[in-house]
Length: 366
Ligand code: PMP
Image (cartoon, rainbow, N blue to C red; front, side, top):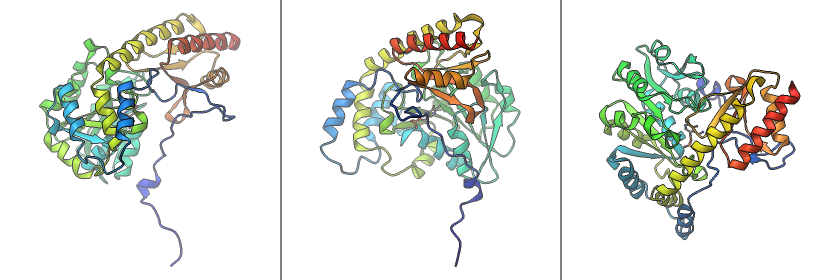
C-alpha cells in the first residue's frame, strides 16, 4: 500500500487554535498581557500546596473528590453535579462531543471564543455563527438560527474577546426559547470578574433545568492556567455524559491540591476582582479621555478590554508600538477583528504605561 493516513474531512477543516504570543518578534521577553492571566499571580496558599503535593507523582484521584466537594460548598452545588476537566477547554469539547455529531448543528455568536468552532468541528458537527449586535450577543439573532438539527449552543458570559455581557434577563430569555433537547453551554470563564449585582443567574439555571451546562475555570482569577483545571455543572444526566468521555485522570494530583488550596483562599479572589474592577475602569477612562483619536474601548465585565481602532492609528501599528514599549497584547486579525486589540488588565503601573503609550502613538498617527 502507498500513501499516508487521511484525516476525517471535518478534522482537516479545523483551523488550529492560535494562542497569544509571549515574546516579541526578536524573541525578547515582553510583559504578557495577551492571555487574560491574573496580574496578582497565584494564591500563595496554592503555591505552598504545590510543594506539598510534589512529594509523589502517582495517579491522581480520578474523581477529584476533595476539589469537587470544596467547589460544591463554595457555590452551593451538590458535588455530584460537578465534572472536572483538563481546563474548561476539555469540558467545552466533551459537551459538543456528547451531544453533537455529523449532521448536527452547534451555534455560537460571531466574535465568540475560538474553541467553540474547533469543538463543533472535531465531532463532525456543523458550526453555525450567529451575527453579533455591536460585538455582543444578540439573543434574537441567535434564536433565529435554531433548527431541528441544533444540538448545542455556546455562549460565553462575559464573552472573550469582546468582554460583552448578557444580563440575567437575556440569559433566561435565551434559555426559555430554546428547545428542551438543546444543550445551552454558558461559559463563565470570567464570572468572578462580574460585578456581584450583575450576576447572570447561570448557576441557578443549571441547577433547575436538564439542558444547561455552566463551565468555569481555574485559569483566570485563580491564576492556575498552567495547571489546566476547569469544571462544569449541570443536571445529573449532563454530568454523567461528560464523565463517560472525559480523560480518566484528567486533573493532575498537583493541580487538584493547588486548586483546593486556591478555592479556600477566597480573600485572594476578592483582591484580584477588586484590583481588576479598579484598573479596568481607570484604563477605560484614560482611553476615553483621548477624545476623538478613534480608540473605542468596548464595555467589559472581564479582565481585559477590547479596543477598536477607528481613527488614524491602526490596531497593527498600536500592537507594534506596544511591543516596542515592552508589552505583548492580543491582535485579532484571525478572528475577524483586524482593527482591534485585546489587552489584559495588568498592574496599575502597566496600565498607566499602556494608556500613555497608546496616547502617544495616536498623537503621532495624527
Ligand atoms: N472560555 C473562555 C471564554 C476563555 O476565554 C478561555 C480561555 N482563553 C477558556 C474558556 C478556556 O480556558 P481554560 O481551558 O484554561 O480553562
